[in-house]
Length: 134
Image (tube, rainbow, N blue to C red; front, top):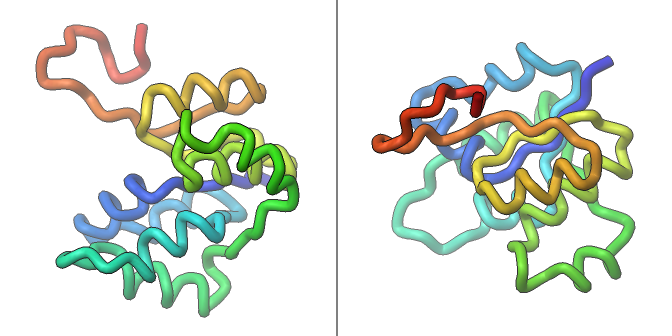
């Protein structure tokens, strides 16, 4: 069974192009941490990309809301990383997931230290490297 935890930017990006359910097509279980959910659904930004779609998918049980148990680890690393990024990584370890979906380079590097595979990489317009980073 494939499990994945997802950060906010991939959720927002997939929602903008109408493909948020692609995650549930690719993975058996898709988890959204409480911090990521809060950031997307309860954030007071002028644009609410992903808000309604994420709420619906969680309410329907397509995506699962997860509350990280190891709050002290989140708090000890907070400041170097955002709460959502930390909860995605720590939540993945707590859930026994092998992968995370996130865009931030530093957070992806941290996820590797936790022996997680990360998906979703923004391609820089000036980058000559391939999408796989090779």
